[in-house]
Image 1 (tube, rainbow, N blue to C red):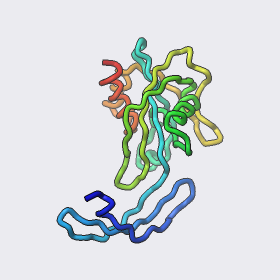
Image 2: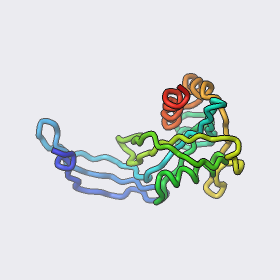
Image 3: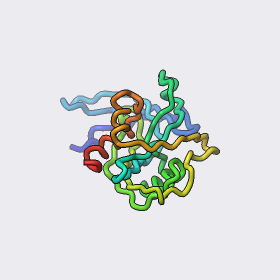
Image 4: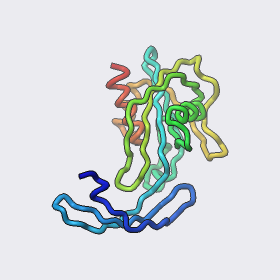
Length: 193
């Protein structure tokens, strides 16, 4: 039996459709014991996205960005977020979108991006699937200052850190972004072996 045989969507109401879409979904779910149960959940649909960690093997370094994020601030995080470059797909392929996003945010024009995995970041309430990439960078690939797009409200600082410092920042709580933690750990295990 597939999951689609166990779910019957009964009602979908749009609660908000401003920047992203928030829906209330009522559905019947067939439990493991065969009984049907009616449930209601709010679902946040922001589309799918991609994220990338640039790395330099010779220098044992990575490029991250630092920026203000409202949701963590509202949840008590009184600091900027340190993150891997990322962006919404906006009807583009993950590979093409992450190349453009990395250049906008970090200033590096990366040539060969390598997809390492996909993940749902908060599957209990958010539909977003994130495509994770790594790419080697060299100083010759720097074509701009990065910093993001001001008209999108981006005010991004570019950070070049050793892989060891990035890992230490996870341990001491300076990096608390899940996608960044995943990519830094992936790089430590598979890139900087």
